[in-house]
Length: 395
Image 1 (cartoon, rainbow, N blue to C red):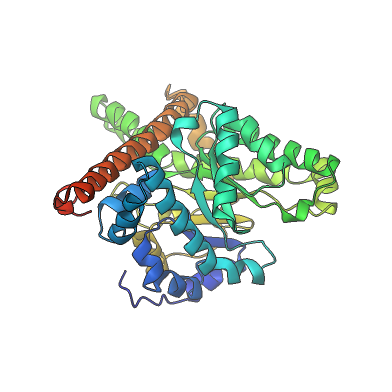
Image 2 (image 1 turned 135 degrees about the vertical axis):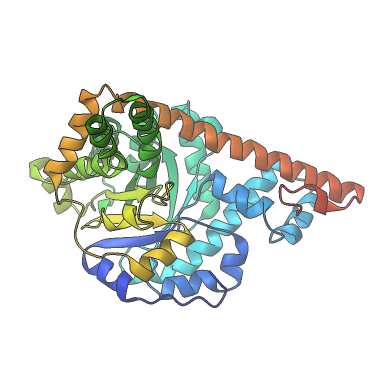
């Protein structure tokens, strides 16, 4: 995507008409300072998500941060302090880019997300403390703090919603965990109402991860295919490839519709509460056998968001198929999951592994980036060439 990118907006307009927002799953300073992010906003992109892995690639793979890094080193900051200073600055600038969207939609859209450190994922108290610190440091009404949907994260999510804070619940893989997330959201709103807070000022999304489910399930299926002797059995197994992620997400959306209706929800809605939108994350295709817009095309519908990396965004506006799909062919989706269960493929086990791996992957990126910044800071302090410290020969 070049600095002069202006996306064709027809596809995105159609998406908006069906009730889905499109957010960019990427952030780096040059994207903001070049005006590219503003151009994407003007094309219909209405928000940004980030995580430690995205930021690691941004910092270690570019020279965008060299000047800011030098200034922070001169101030005597430690590598972890530098990391958060850089991230918060990027989030603030991106939030300012999307502030017009936030204003124009009355706070319904235009959000930018920043994630708590993965090293607090096992502690509700530390997660709460960091979420509040990030909220105060970013100091923008259209910033969402991301909290992982771990067991320890659930009470922190409820706490933050009850305090009227905007929360992006991330790393949701299983339907059961999603149900816990929605309960934390709704009970948090009920507590906020008891405290006399303004429910209409709270925005939250539940980030349900899609392609990673297929990656792990497909690996299990492929092992069965390779060991099968009968052609019919091989074909039957192959028909399930690439189906689990979307089916799992569609079942979650069914629960979204059920849980955001009925007397309990209607009471909150009358007090101004907004629904906790489903956000489809991990929507870039990891297997070349599948259409590159599959995870966008098959999950379109009201009160949803799809957050996409640049390449998927370009593919979608070029040849994506825009139609309401998220609540269609539900019988097939449930049947696919039932067939996987009959094969002994434990989706609960798969999603539990993915949750652990997700936190570990972000922690690894966080540690790697801290190390890169430490090396770069040392190089600046000692007068050594900084170009030898970054993972791609920069910074």
